[in-house]
Every structure is written in C-alpha cells, then in structure tokens.
Length: 73
Image (cartoon, rainbow, N blue to C red; front, side):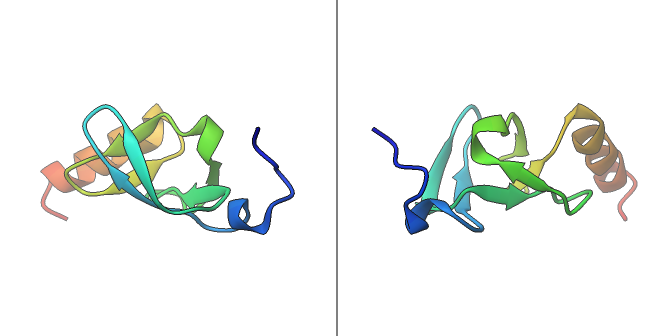
C-alpha cells in the first residue's frame, strides 16, 4: 500500500521516459512540464517525449514543444 505521507514520495521525481512507459529513477510526487514549468503529479502524467526525456502537462504543451523542435528553435 502506498503511504502518501512518506517523504520519499514528496517533491520532484526523476524519471526515465520510454516509448509507452516511464521508470522512476528518484522517487517523488511530481515532475515539471518542459513547456510550461507547471508541476505534474505522477499519477496524472500522460504526455512525455522519450527522445527528449521531457514531460508535458497536456497534449497542447506536447504539441507546442514538438512544433518548436521542428522549427529548430
């Protein structure tokens, strides 16, 4: 059973992003969106780039980041 008051599950997590899943490298409660800088709770994380090793808060943020990368910026 997950103990949400456990300190190892608070703060910023470090993840390794795969094509369809991610692996927790350093336990934490959230990651930061690479596009917006907003916190994403791990249980809400649905969008990321395995190539760039970045998380995104939603599809719009992921699309904006993808377009930026396509433009070479």
